[in-house]
Length: 256
Image (cartoon, rainbow, N blue to C red; front, top):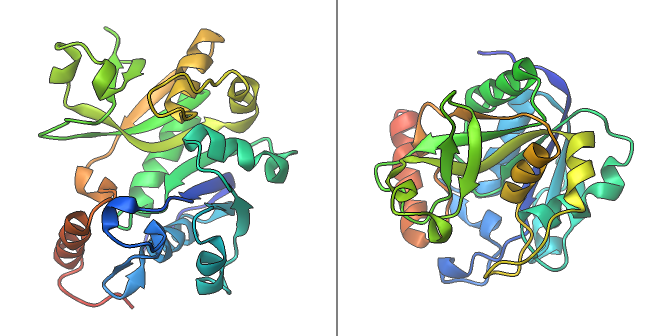
């Protein structure tokens, strides 16, 4: 059993979404994979990672989410209006007022994500001394994902959303997984600069990476070894795909 320890890390789990494409009114993180809610897997992984604190951002059906995890050692953060990932981090601001460590932002609908991959992200982030680090993945078909644009030194130049990407950038197969590590005080400095001038009218954390660079801070990329771990569950089809991968990864056994 690998042993990880990240006491100076606060994990922020984004779990406020409705999951409209799941063809059900159930909050997305409550959909079950192999008999357990998606959020349960993410919380288990963070426990294995031994982060100092876990905050869970809830919105849609928040009371139901809370009721399903009565024993969870987490701090609940309410995002009544879902205005994007950057907005979710802003909602956690009061709970993190005196926090000076690393914030790890993960999605509540990635049940296959392992502690080993998150550990690699956190170690890479700490060793590089960067203000922000994004976890990337390589996909055969990157359509719809934000592309990781690197400079000649291999460092992060920008994260360009699919719809804003040039034909050349669309050829890039390395994409943003939506998982990040930030030096929290530096992130706070740029969060106020986030704007919602985009087609969704939302505040995106991807923009925080750009703002950190503009403020003169370094940002980095750590590429996940296996993109399957980062499969987000947006549709019923993706849920059954995740179950199949889970069984293959765990030798067909049921989760205990």
